[in-house]
Image (cartoon, rainbow, N blue to C red; front, side, top):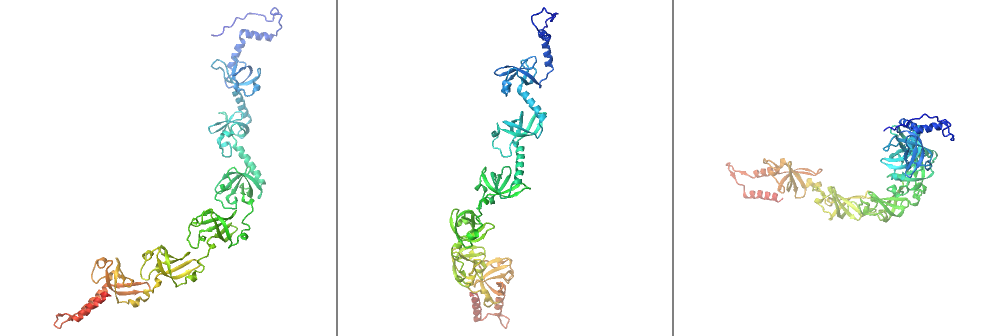
Length: 592
């Protein structure tokens, strides 16, 4: 219900008969009148109606309790502000004027709702909008971790994305909380009243500045300290106080290493020498091994070719073994230089890592940092007098060590092998594989055909133990002679026959019979014994052609010649002696 106003009485407040013993001013009387009749109250309501939430007002601290501070802003009621919103102790003094934010003109209890914290943020936002812009540098304190980054207090809360915290890999965001840094404002959103800041951009600008300064003053040959920031297969990147330098794996140590991690570790502080500076590309090449003297400088004097050295096997590769002669000096023993007597294909067959071995210096490539060594050279070379021990034409007995498609390897003595080529196994037999006539482990007699000491090759032959039958074939088997043999193979074009002397001959399909037939197998089969006539001899190409047909025709003609026709036109048997001679001749041919 509206408050009932008391009736106003006509009163002369200036009359001397009213409290004439009290001295007061006219304005004081007017204020008292307004207070008595409620005119002040109606004026306060009018002022409140003109205010809106979201304004910053100036009020006076009138009371301080344990949890709240009472602020009088000159409205119909006083406001309560949580004491926790006062960060500065000097603000909590009775009678102090202080700015507060009008959050609500009337709360649930009918009182106005004020906030000291919001007033402070409001003024801070005004200050930032007025004095800062995107790109401005501000100081702030990291206050907490949020999704995607950190919140920073720069007078108001600003968002620091995770990608803008640092220019290096970050392991733990909690390490930044509570610390104060300089930040660069990336974005100001006035509508949403939020700010995005970056620390990384400042660090990058600082790094670029330091890099430019360092590149300007750095000199080749200078000694610098750097921290290992990254290790790769090809080298190490060092942080040289704002500039990155590359320490290549070949410049880390004079000795051979597989990976840079064998020499340095992440975070290690090392001293290096500047090898090269590319100011245009901003690149610096560094060296670690250059701090020490180059052990290869006097290598040719210390280890001339032919020197016998002793060292430790430090690494095995597919093509050989590396031996450390002294710190920083390694030599290669190729697999071909490991043994005179063994065909070594894997270095582990001869040596192991950690073995101490003796070797002979074979060659030195100083500029390339290479030394070739040999183990077998420490022993006698069995090939030295091989030409005297195995002259061409001499006959030897050797053990068959291995069979291949092209021949058989035999061992003449430890470390000296020879080859019997498949073409040197037989004069007359066509050998498809050495296993047809030889067996691994057997002893075989052969003739030395050639000796190549430099290439370490000796060739031998088995067939050379006997004369070549093809050289006298025209005399021993002239055209027209009758031969006997066994069918070894049939084909569509004819049949192969092995004669009793071992020579293989061909009977063409047209020479198999004097009678019509369908196919070769209708006439002869493998294993059949046949008699045929020599019709062609080719010693140069080692070919011999036979004919059963010619043999049969000649045989029939001879039989016809033996028939005697009587004068009366009748047939008369041959004389017994003539029949017996013919039969004996056939038997003799059969025996042949």
